[in-house]
Image (cartoon, rainbow, N blue to C red; front, side, top):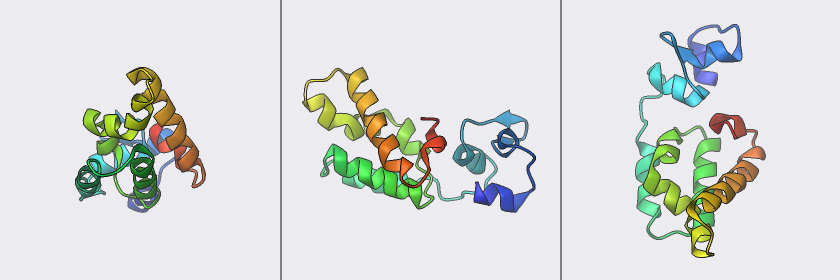
Length: 123
């Protein structure tokens, strides 16, 4: 959001999440669309390196840390394989994919709430 506000004044939260007439779900998506975030693949590349050798909790910690530090993490969150690895420990406990995904979201919300980043993902 900081990048958006530095670029131009906004009159509302919705205005800050809009670019060229398109309303985005998050400030991060709007900043990417506006070209304010130029390196959108670095976080995804980093996550892909670690997803094969890290546990679900470790990956959720990495994801939360990258989000808190301002890296564009929406591409990770939108990638089905990445979501699977983020929730794999819950799946391994016998939960259905849907329940595992829900528990993963609750854990991410808890981790991101410490830095007030939950609204990025509309949790």
